[in-house]
Length: 193
Image 1 (cartoon, one colour):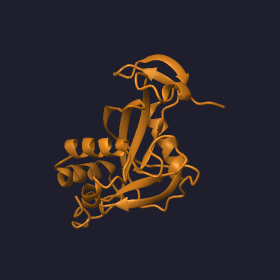
Image 2 (cartoon, rainbow, N blue to C red):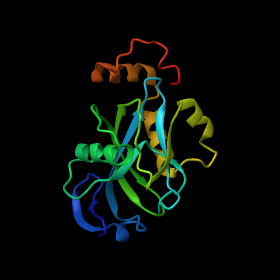
Image 3 (tube, one colour):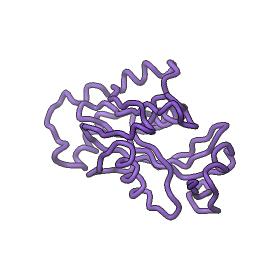
Image 4 (cartoon, rainbow, N blue to C red):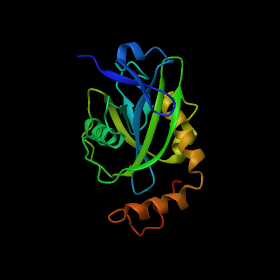
């Protein structure tokens, strides 16, 4: 059965509903997606390597979690559902970061991004994901021109860095918001930012 998605305006207001096969391949049809950036306590970002059969960015490293928001679905509910579907994890603490529009010659997405901390293990969906791995921010920055990453992830990463360039201070604030067990007291866990 084909997936149906909401076509929205730049503010997320629903214009209509259409099948995914009509939306993908037509960048004039903006649709909603959710991303979750999953960090570990060392400040490394979990990335997923997309399966080789995916229609978008096959075999490329991508955002920790990403997926379409179903018609009528709450955005936070979608983020939790995608975490479970993709990584086999029920997230305890998701925090909203920002929203933006990602557009290329294939599609246009209204992206809602959350973040959380999780150390694993991850029982990831092997039909959609080849592997998962934590990457240091420095390793990501040094690999941006390598061709390893999806253009969606590069856009997400630049958005994240531009909003949170003062990351150690901001990350400490986020950790305080999350509270225990994420407050490790280890001053070295942010060394990769």
